[in-house]
Image 1 (cartoon, one colour):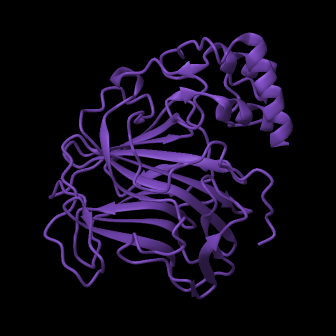
Image 2 (cartoon, helix red, strand yellow; image 1 turned 135 degrees about the vertical axis):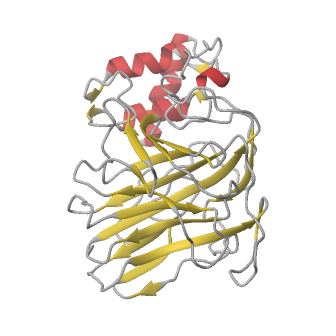
Image 3 (tube, one colour; image 1 turned 90 degrees about the horizontal axis):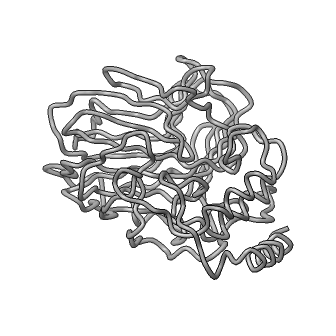
Amino acid sequence: MKSLAWSFIVGTAAALGVGASPAFAAAGCVGDMDGNGVIDVDDLLTVIESWGNCTNCSADVDNSGAVDVDDLLTIIDVWGPCGCGPEEGCLEGTEIWCEDWELGNYSRWTGGYSSSGTCRSSGFVTNRFVTPTRSHRSRVTCAASSSHRGYGGLRFQGDNVVPSFHVASSGGIDAPHGVVVTFWVWLEVPYTFSPTRWLSLLTVTHDCSNNWDQVVTVNLDDSSMRLKPVHVSSVQYAPNAPSFPRGQWVRVTSYINYYTGEIHVWQDGTKVVRGTFSRPNVRMCQWHWGLYASGNNDNITLYEDDISIVKLQEPLVNFNVEPRFPNLVSACTPIPLAGDAEGADDSQ
């Protein structure tokens, strides 16, 4: 499929002069589905490979409920670098941690994922990924008497990850302008969640002890299947906030600022929700991602890829637009052109 799509794109681009004279994208970067600050062949491939009826699909640029020729023409119309500044969500930041799973181990973590447990398994896979060649998969196959904890964890001393949870920290990331946390997940679950049957995808706390007190989490915990900040003072959903799709890769982006006590969450570039909170310390010390779920869950598969923490060097000024970093150089494995999971087999 990709080779045929590529041939079509090259021919179309040449015929329309896209490669020779790119237009600047409209403010807000319509069509930049991978958030790299450029409307390019990867975005066009996404449109072609998503062709047809599509609900809550990033390739449905005009939100018509279908990926069709109008979306294809929109991508071509805005081809090239995004005309992007802080008002459009483009910011300067420093990536202080990342994980793309290409090392095939947990050496970037303070504590890695447990490979197995009661009704649970975790490990690296090559059958489904975002970039470059592998991702991480956790599974829950039966209910348990306590919460499922299929996740890895980080403890920071300043901007640096400590090598073990036996190593104490006097304080974590100090970020007056906040941090942006981005990760990709693919969720498979045959039921909807509820306040008593929940899944948590992200956890952060100022507490540097093993107690992990006063956490802030991003959960799925009701039948609407919308991302939700939990353990916060207030929650305000964006108009028409989308539900979380299953059976496809989803990019989750969170802006977290302990100085101002707020968290904002986007899903595939669409604003979902804002939460407010108050904590006694402004430094973010400990984090975890992965399959953290109530024990009554009995059938969840979660793939994760391309996790990053970026410390902002300037304020976020437009909270309606997903923040991104066109000038960012990742410390993880460089991402190759068209390095996706096209044609991947899901038999593993």
